[in-house]
Length: 345
Image 1 (cartoon, one colour):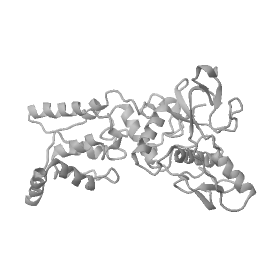
Image 2 (image 1 turned 90 degrees about the vertical axis):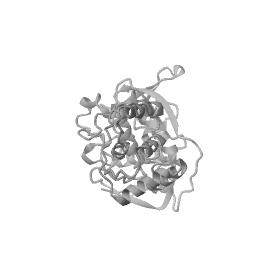
Image 3 (image 1 turned 60 degrees about the vertical axis):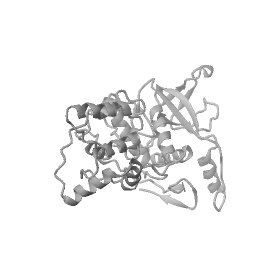
């Protein structure tokens, strides 16, 4: 039986390092107990952090710890485990690279989830929904058209060497892979007003250009069609600054500038606008898409970034009609709510 990462939905290979998340405060269990015995809203609060236990996949739903002094103790995924101190803990497995990437997303402010406790509530609530469907693992996300953002499960065993399982944090030759997608710029002829706008923009100081662009461009709903109203150098800066394409924070500026200089020597201006617009499209690296030849880890990074960015508490309903409605103890931002909301397929 394959064990899947609760963040990205892809399997963890046997012996692959991973992390088990757990809540030492047992917030969900405390809240459930409260509503089972009392009326009125829960006043539960905690300042305790979500625990992270470094493990390796031992197969058959088991993980073994990496600590030398633990003598390889076992923990069970998606369950409390009597063999581990703190037997009432519920353990949720995630890839190490998915956890590193998720923490960066939380810190960046992209998306609705901002803290590890909010992330825990998202994943733990999904567990409740999947148990109601007769499954043991939470789906990684919802609204994944054509199985792009959420890998299908039927052929997981044959997909372990596919890009959806590649390390999304440490991507070899990332900058070279991005620059390999560059094409020469072939802008259409601009009319008088367009040419005047571009000329006036180019005369502005760099600080003013950056300020203007910070209001115009965001990564959400970014149109794919090029206008060529802004110089390619401005698009290059947008790419390197990481505001428009935040998942490319580790591009090597020196490599990019070297590519530009080499093109200039040959009389070639690279089309950074086309590249940036493609990078901003959610499915631009899917099989058969314009950027499908990107490094496997980068393709997976874009996929995981989208999944985490779209997360919210209660974002997944049971796959099949449940026998009884499921209480949702938190609102979409992870705040305790009262009266309770009951959800069902």
